[in-house]
Length: 129
Image (cartoon, rainbow, N blue to C red):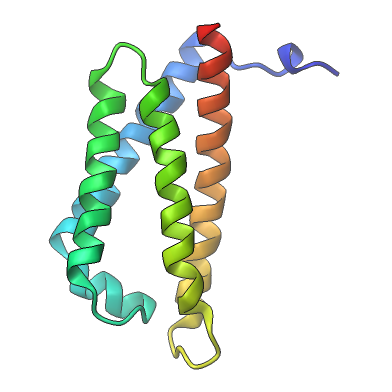
């Protein structure tokens, strides 16, 4: 099988990118407006400024995806942000964290969205060539 056998259409790819942009806006708003609650929910300590920074990064990526003619760069920025998110979540999955189940669920969700971001970014990059 070849990639082209499974490649999304331009319309599907644009819809996926826009969906990722909207997801970024929603997640970014949560991180920006409720950092203490989010940190507590994950047992991540209390780092509201870091959580707000992550929120601003998400919002910037979301706006970039939604407002640019070519969202490729901004979807790759999401991939880079996913790496930061996974790195920040990894220490929350220790046995001493009473919320580690929630943290592990968040980590798994970020890993899945990372795969979707990589798929979209790679497809956008191929389309641009």
